[in-house]
Amino acid sequence: MYSNKTDPVAIVAPAARPADAHKKVDTKAIQALDAKHYMHAFTDTKSLGQVGARVIVKGQGIYIWDSEGKRLLDGMSGLWCMNVGYGRTTIADAVHAQMQELPYYNSFFQTTNVPAVQLAAKLVEISPAHFNHVFFAGSGSEGNDTNLRLIRRYWDLKGAKERNIIISRENAYHGSTIAGASLGGMSGMHDQQIGVTIPNIVHIGQPYYVEGGKGKTPEEFGLVAAGWLEQKILEVGAERVAAFIAEPVQGAGGVIIPPSTYWPEIQRICDKYGILLVADEVICGFGRLGTWFGSDYFGIKPDLITFAKGVTSGYIPMGGVLVGDRVADVLIEHGGDFNHGFTYSGHPVAAAAALENIRIIQEEKLIEKVHNETGPYLAKKFGELNDHPLVSIAETCGFVAGLNLVKKKGPTLHECEAFDSSLEVGMICRGHMFGNGMIMRAVGDRMIIAPPLVTTVEQIDEMVGLIRFCLDATLEDLKKRELI
Ligand SMILES: *Cc1c(COP(=O)(O)O)cnc(C)c1O
Image (cartoon, rainbow, N blue to C red; front, side, top):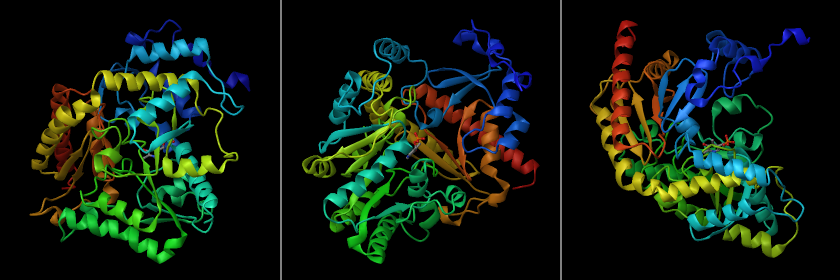
């Protein structure tokens, strides 16, 4: 019934300018409409409806503003993507110009477009030497669907159809399509898709020292965790394994930073059994670790690289796969159509945004900055949080960081007393962070950040200062509630 509907146009005055956008937004009305019609990602719609979503109206640099005019320091770069920061007018200009010239065309009909070609060449230039081809998609999830198709096609053409098992890791995140969720190791996602997970995808443990490293040095544990891959290969039969997929540093799983010994051993095992190595670089790509790709950081040589997020800094959706020579040569030399692709593969507007984003990263030397200056500074400042009574470990890798909240510190990391997980102490802490203008994400009782690469030394001081202030507030709160 039409009368039942609110006219959304009435809520934001048409003349609203970003600078004072929040003054033009009726927060309550937007929240009510949101609760009524909008099913958010990974959200309990019922309970969000009761509290009302925070309405974000503006971004500039590393800060965002809500519709009440409150400023927040975005320690999560949106969702790990806002690498060059908010408010980049040159990206907006590039998008505007491309929309006027050619807003869309496909690449199905033996056709192409200029920005997509230029972007493919640019991606080849910045990626490791054995990458000479790019397959475009619309998101990271679609990139991983593409990987699955490429892996199957590769082994089929190699006459080894029986190589159809893909090994992934528990607590991995590879997206939310059926393929993404099946490849991923998020138990909460698997629980909700009983009967629809893709067969022949198996998982091994994650290289999470806090969880599994008791009684070992990180270096010893890294070898043990990599050894799980070899065990699994032998268990299912080496001649049946097609590929191993992993994030260089797990992001959504809670910024799981592997010990230094892990990746070289994984590479050795993949080489030994001839299995394809897929690096899901949706987070680690485009400078996150102070190198173009996480693979550069850890010195590994994957056959396929998934990208998304940082490729456009989130300004326009885009994802895809860098296809290494080992796979590309087989597909191309054999010939025949690769029956896969998306309407928006190689979207010219997204490609224009990506080209300008990468130009900014290069011109402002953001990767060198993270590598030489701000990354080490973040490591030092964030590391100082190790002295906090709630923190068992605070660690960084480039521009990702995580710290674990514990009830009682012990003489060593593995002798600390954890909180009862049902108390959701991480969420309590996140509440204090948001309340005080700091966006820090909770994964269980691990608090994580992935700030924009443009964050300055002064802003790191501000950010870590805010985090410490909020940890203090959390501690007081927990004492008051008698949870500690
Ligand atoms: C975000 C993410 C994805 C999924 O990307 P979408 O664009 O949300 O589909 C895949 N892999 C990793 C490692 C991610 O962080």
